[in-house]
Image (tube, rainbow, N blue to C red):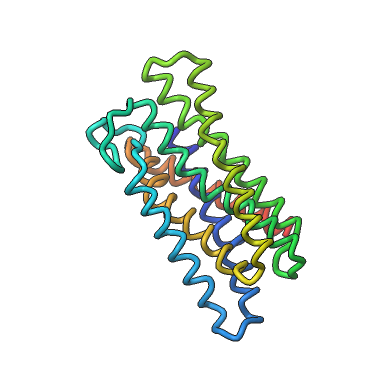
Length: 228
């Protein structure tokens, strides 16, 4: 589990740069402002929004006691809080896919269809370990195999919703495209640094988790460079 979480983190880090930040900076070169401004502003806002969601939405990270749940205080069950923790992860991933396809549809040289497909493949691959990160703890909590599997799938429903929202926002306001790409990157990096990597290291399997992260980064980089 720790190696798979590390793998997911590596994919998200690579996608944040190769598929989101780099195109955002490239597109910004045609603007009348310094090319780093949209990337920096969007990246910061992405992390800020995820932090606000983190503060409000009740959730519980894998391996922690119910007393360590984050967000507003609630009487929700431990299983519900575990599901919500992974659901938060999936919001920026869906945004990344939607914004990438929105950018490709705008016809800009820095954003191609193959690059959008690359980020979709990368996010899709790392969704397998993320789904397991939901289902396995739920199974350990005593939930049946079917229900644990089913809730693991439900936690990913937010991704297509976020993807459609991201693509729609880009299509109706093309001028925000560099900011939107950087926003998705900032949201993903926030999730990786604040949740995914610490969770993968918590059980003491640091070398295995770090190796998983390295492999995930390499695979996502290869996908993006080869297809993009």
